[in-house]
Figure 1 (cartoon, one colour):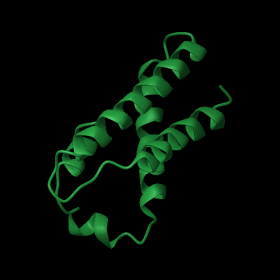
Figure 2 (tube, rainbow, N blue to C red):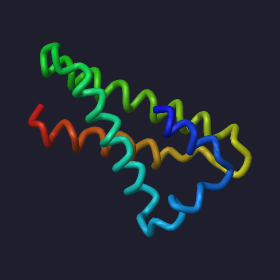
Figure 3 (cartoon, rainbow, N blue to C red):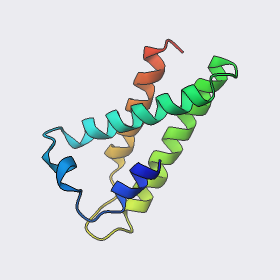
Length: 99
């Protein structure tokens, strides 16, 4: 989450991220899939369905707050489609784990 916040705070993304020739939405999905996986693994001791619920809610809420945060950064804009890509990335992890 700290890494996402750091990158979202930049008016222009750092060169290594800019050099990746990946669609912006795909990059959002990949990053939030990783975040969802980390949250899912952190909650693994609990019931897996409960852990999945926590993972999806955490990543979606964080994605929304990240987009709001970007609206205050000069040179960045809030984009609802980025939020959708965030949610899709999170859901892919949960589907992959059959939850």
